Image 1 (cartoon, rainbow, N blue to C red):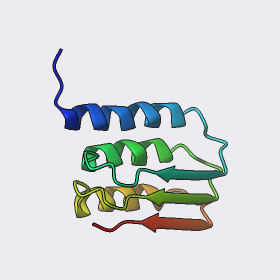
Image 2 (cartoon, helix red, strand yellow):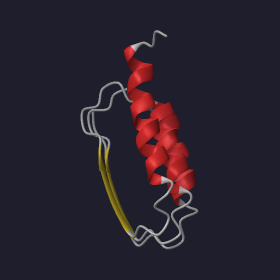
Image 3 (cartoon, helix red, strand yellow):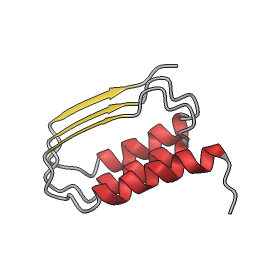
Image 4 (cartoon, helix red, strand yellow):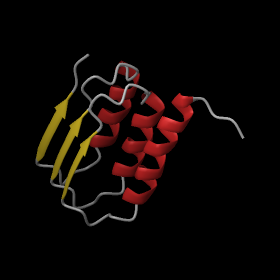
Length: 97
């Protein structure tokens, strides 16, 4: 089966997200996808979906700098998911082009 590079990059993020889903008691998470130019809003949505099960998450650091395919749409989806994590006390989001 042939995938273009964008699908493979978001699929990789999807695999990481699937692994995260089993870590619901995690209290701190640092995800650095700096300069992953092929990660899109779909990849960020996969990460966001994985976060919804984190009932103990207190600290989240997410570096999206130089991920030019992530748009306001992806960030809005992330924001919606983060609002549901009531245990979150510290948030560090980094993004720039």
